Length: 203
Image (cartoon, rainbow, N blue to C red; front, side):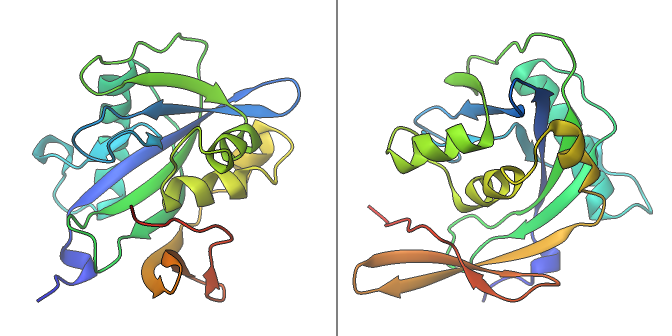
C-alpha cells in the first residue's frame, strides 16, 4: 500500500540566484553517477534529518533548515532569508518517495566550494541556458528542476524572481505511459492541471 502524502519523508532544496548581465543566473550541480538522481543537474538540497526538526513546527520549517544545512554541506555556501516557492509530491511509481520543498534565496559573493563526494560538477547558468542544454541532451533535468527553471525564465532579474515567492504552489507529479514512452505530468495546486511541455522517456 502506498503511504499517504503527509507521511512521506521531507526534503528541502535551495534555488540560489545571482545577478548577471543580462538577467540572472542560478546555481546548479551535477550529481555523481550513483545515489540519488545519478548524473542529473539539480539544485543544492537534501532530506530533513533529526537535527532539522523542532517540536511544534511544520514540515516547511524543517525543510527550510534542511535546505540551509545541505547547501552548506554540498557547496559551502551560507544562505538565509529563504523564500518558499513550491512543494513537489513524487509520483506513486517512484521507488523512493520524498516530498520536497523548494526555496528561493539571493546568493552572496562567496565562491562555492563543492563537496567532492556529492557534487560531480558545478555551474552558474541562466534558466534559459540550462533549459537549452537539457533540450540539446547535454544536461539531464528532472521535472521539478525543469519546471522551476521554466517558471524562473519569465523574470527579468533576480529581484523580480525573489519577490514572486512567499506562497507555495503544490505540484503532484503523475506518470503517463504512452505509445511512444513514458511522460510525466503534474497537477498544480491553485491552478488547472497541465502536462509538461517536454517528454522524459524512461531508458
